[in-house]
Each structure stands twice: as C-alpha cells, then as structure tokens.
Amino acid sequence: MAFNLITKVWQTGNLEWWGRIDGRDVYLGRREFPLPPMEGDQWRVAATGAIFRIEKGAVRCVQPPHGESGQEGQ
Image (cartoon, rainbow, N blue to C red; front, top):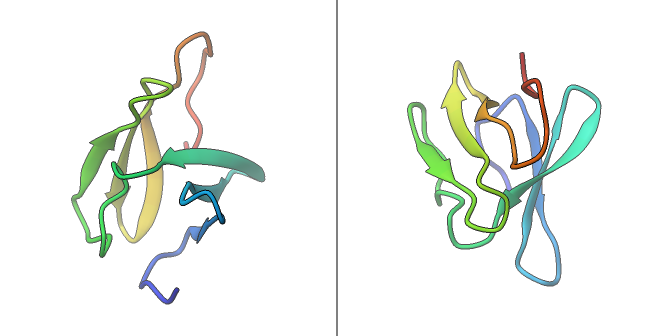
C-alpha cells in the first residue's frame, strides 16, 4: 500500500498493521489504524494500550504499550 509516510508500514494476512520504528517492528493495531493515514491522526491500540500519532509524515509513539518503559519513535 502506498501512503505518504516516512515510516514503513504494512498489513499482515491477519489484517494487523505493523510499522518499522527506530529499527523495531511495532504493532500499530487492527481497525484502530487510520485509513488513509494522515498528518495529525492519533489512535490507541486496544490490545496494547499504546498511543501513536502521525507527526511530520512519520508514525510516532506518544504512549508506549502497557508494561514497557520509554517511547519508540523518539
């Protein structure tokens, strides 16, 4: 899928969205992932509690998943 994002994102056969953030594969959710993703979009992943936002064309982690410290994407 072609999106105007700096972050590489893909969808699996299970309809799960993943992204490559800071060299790590990060789960971005299922239905929560905005389609099409646009600047300023923000969503919370139900399965993990992580919150992501699209800033300057890249997916950034605003709040890490439950049980993790630090933030991906910074």
